[in-house]
Image (cartoon, rainbow, N blue to C red; front, side):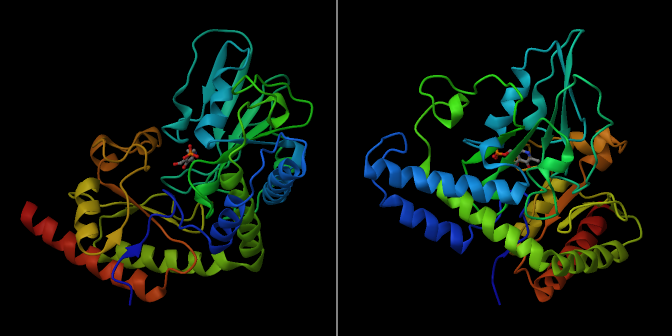
Length: 343
Ligand code: PLP
């Protein structure tokens, strides 16, 4: 029995063995991918192999993958498009979609495809000619089938650490023929779109994780995760008659449960469960710790109190039914205590 149970996969997923092995191997590759000699070509081969693997997982062409330091960096392109206003999906990710430009004229849209706090999957709005669309598919990749080619979007952003790759590496996906400003200028790396010597080790880890994530998705590993999430949902919701399971019954990620527990602050729940041996979160990883009510839940119509009483429990393959039931018991016991203290 594991003494710590990690139920915060939407914040970051544990590193996959395949990613670790690919990174360890890449550490001994001496060349710079831009060098023409054999050592350089060796490093270039690793980068291109990873590009093809990421493309296969995302459903795009390898040439449409631009490696970046993560999804946040990739998304910054949206704010730099030569347009007067950028519209953002209010239920999308807090940290990512902070850029909003005032003004009239040509527009671009940033759309959170799968929300990290609620797990809700929302298809983008009907397309308008001349309005570029960027999809945040960070939480979707590897968890639900997705094809960039079929999405019709001009751009998408992905992050390796959400599907078992290392932190600090991600990609901007840009549809063939779509013009976007360079993210970083200097050398001509990444087809002139993101200058700077490639993070070969991170890229190799991302590629290996992408391939393994796609394999697992096709093998149906998330079906059992969804089953355990639903068991947990049922156990927590039946513990008291006033909890709210956000988005229950709607299209949502297989692993995510967002629960509002009236009378018990989200941060207090996180601390109580941490002491009991479980890692969960209140809101998104980058806004948690700031003791703020969830903007996402408020945008969905929940009030300030409800938005501050929410937790996110996000499972992954390998989390056992016994762990989920143990969590449910511990959470219910703590909630009863919290309610009796408040009474
Ligand atoms: N978009 C979503 C939906 C996320 O959940 C996250 C990470 O929390 C990000 C973007 C940011 O990704 P990165 O950590 O690669 O910058």
